[in-house]
Length: 80
Image (cartoon, rainbow, N blue to C red; front, side, top):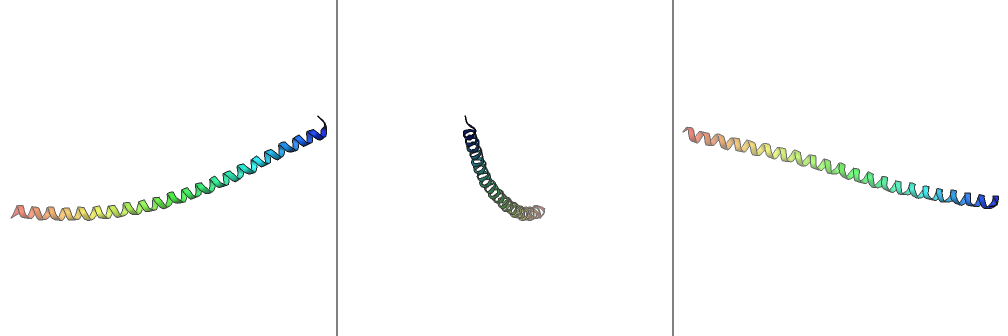
């Protein structure tokens, strides 16, 4: 193998490695962007679920109060 052929092979090898590195960086950037989008969606879902829990807790409290009031009225009927 002549020095010129060796340099050509070495240059071709370097070129291939650089191309693979560029493709890898591009793929990682896409994956990073997708991961950021998923994280943002998960955060929005967590906020929505937290609001839903708060609403359900308020409804539960209202129902409990109404049941306690009804039980109080039933106790008054039994006492009369």
